[in-house]
Image (spheres, rainbow, N blue to C red):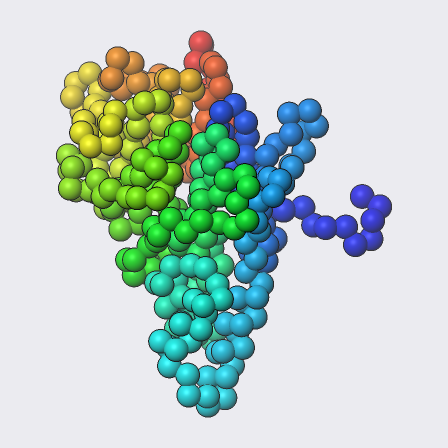
Length: 312
């Protein structure tokens, strides 16, 4: 606290619990510099950077893309295609990300400023880390000198609405599920080396994914059309309540092997494959859900973090 040039604390944008450990993703305030993954130390409650993990740094891309835009304004004959290729040679990201970055006009509303430096979601399974960066999914394991490109990326046009939607990830052992912004669900059973598109096997059309959680060996996927589950990733079933109603869950959480869900109005627990209501009058604008034993926690946009005792 006494150092005049001490580093600013990271801006935490995503927290994940895996194998009993808490991980967090953080970057600088503007989101245009370095992005790191941290583990929360169990003895000092401090953020410890993952040892040996390469750091994504957007600063060079920020400067280079700004310079190219200036060159074009000054009359340089640089086509969109040539600029995109030059950026892709030096930096990582989805082709659609670079296309939007190149066409962004600083004189227009800044909807794409954050698009250009978006870091995305991450997931952890054992010592394997998955992270989306510039709308492309990467994997890292201890001993790797760089992030491995899984070749999964967003190909849909990143409109202002889709650009700020979150990719949904769930990882367990060698399996990783990805709910993409275009409504496609894909899975890899070998840590992202090969992929299978599960979309045709889903029991109904999906436009958006709300959450994906894994309770070994079962995966649960909350969508805009309802919640579905599978034990093998290939055969899917709709999760309903006792009356057969297909409920829309905004958030899912797992405590051990028990699954919980939050709709717009109620909280539920999955009992014998059926949703059972455990709380009503859920606060408005719930942003996250977590369960620890008998306590259900919800993060809200306007009312902070609230909890509900499941025993009461």
